[in-house]
Image (cartoon, rainbow, N blue to C red; front, side, top):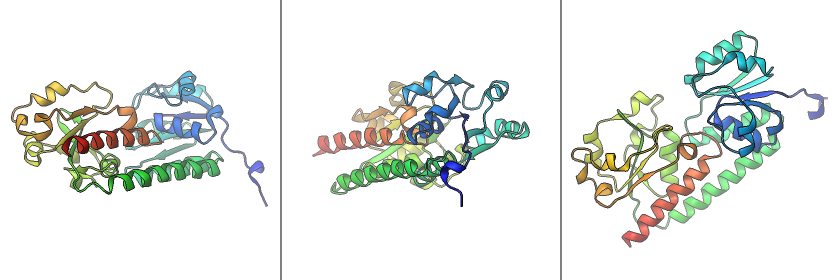
Length: 268
């Protein structure tokens, strides 16, 4: 019978996304992380690791030079580098989470692969408990404001599934919730007129690493008719808090809940 001490878990880990690095640290394996993407910022210690590239632009030679026995990747957008690394004989764990529940499952999967299943379970439980608290708080609101989330501005791309779910957890109603099941960004493209017709009361935006321009959003033709524009309810959400499918989503949830709560107070 084997025990945990008998299993040779990965000792040199390269993370290709910010959330995989954060997960590795939060489950207690940060000392084994040897490489991270340039976007890694949580925890601060992750920034001291060797940078290996961006979300889709990586130095494979640099990754291989670190001698990893496990590389953690995310999504079909990284399939090229994943294929190249597997071809070079490296073990790669690539997840493709789209929903909040799948994010929790990813934490458990990575935690298990690193031999830190118990700490992963504890992290997932903490996140689940906080979601329950936020849901309970917002459940007493008689009305839920209509919320439009913009992931990109040209063309307009609405939020991925986990973003739509966070909006609902926080007490809002995603005006494009029917796009939630979409697997790719192309399926989440909408026309400006569609946004106007759905008249969101709150606009949230996070432009994938680019600073949001609220004035430019408000100045779009016809958007002066949107309730959120008329009331100055245009808010930028840091991409690291909402577009990175890992523990940092809790920061985004708190921020959205805060915005919705302030909206409710002003409407009372």
